[in-house]
Length: 605
Image 1 (cartoon, rainbow, N blue to C red):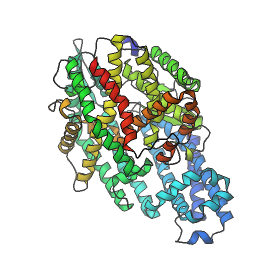
Image 2 (image 1 turned 180 degrees about the horizontal axis):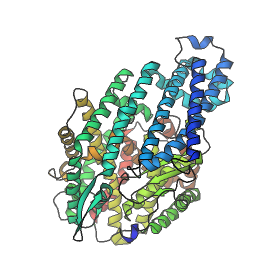
Image 3 (image 1 turned 90 degrees about the vertical axis):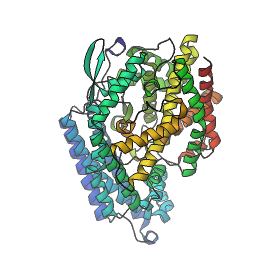
Image 4 (image 1 turned 135 degrees about the vertical axis):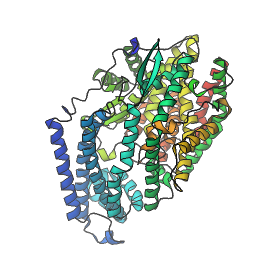
């Protein structure tokens, strides 16, 4: 471990609970169970569920309004309890997959979450039946009025609910089906190690460390890491292929029984966009592929190649090497955030000072990075795998953006919090852009190339690679409807998707057939097509940053208001507040033009 990563923090969860076996954790677990029992009893005793057609108009509306207020309050209280229990346990599961206590606790919480899902289904079906009198209920009950936009979404989605017994069955089967397959993929990939030789010594390295070598300045290190990675993934491909078949098979079955058009239908609704918006986004992404290939071919030339093998896609270019100690990363981020807004800088400062970040790569820890909210403490926690690179600096800024988004929703009932994936990336991309733009503006001439390189690597991953992942997942779901796929099938589809997206810029003999295996996004049983929202988020975030550059500080209050409101309302409605038409191909093309200008400068250097 070098100087930049010698003393990396692990996150501090001690203000949430004392331990997984602590009395405080056990008390909240018991309290959540009791609240579920009470909620279930009220739902059962009051006959909450789908009502007969036309029954709503004959109900005692004041009594219904009072009951609705009560049930919403109970759901919010229960949600806060389960959020704290889940976040605390997840902090252990994701950083140490060998922790058996954490695995057991997570299973207990999943059982409670499954029961919560059953209660929610009945409440949502009931609310859907009350659609004809929703306006009357909002006038009669302050809780209903406060949740009016959320309830409108419940009403719309209630049409896709199965009968309550079938929804119960689906929820229970997910624990031993899709949910179990996600755990299997996560456990297998986080515990996998590969032998790697460095400085004349061969050691077993966790895959998080191996994959971080993809941006090592030494080409021989990158290539050997790539070869070691592929060999290691090959050793576990069969159980993970089994997992992927189960997850996508379950998604197909559920979509059919819910009356959905297809698996994508639920994802569009979850992201609060329509097919017209998705097609506009995908069309703009396709149109931009030649420009990204121009960047990749320019990069290949700078590395002395005709085109790039996979191990060079993330390679640094140029003689200048941007590296940061943990302290330097903290100081840089806080300072640049402060130039935008002191509240944002204060949030980041708090996250660093209070050890809300787990930054150390280690065995048993999941790769990548994420941010999770801890609503009960009005805090967030960030997982990273910091290696001192500029890429990891911008990754930290990105995840802190998610945390700031969470902080903008402090004080809201939990049912009104969150964001669809399409809008969840708004603050993260914005914060990442703040750090990138500042670094580029302050960089001496020789440092502009590596800074542009880092930005374009990220943009290529989010546009080109995610386009390939969309192609891959679409074809997997299409073929899984006929039969299970083998590990070879998954590899072949992944390679075909990469060839279509990257085109002539990447060596077709040296691609990455196992990205389907290592990316956890494919294994979230209730989040299919967990790919295009990242492209949406990048381009929407860039578009918002362009508005900030035009409007200056007047933009900031409106921006925070947008972040506060992402838990409710359609994406198109929220975007329209800023004059953005997300159904227009032109908006996405304009955001891509920002990246295009970076590509042109890069190619000229």
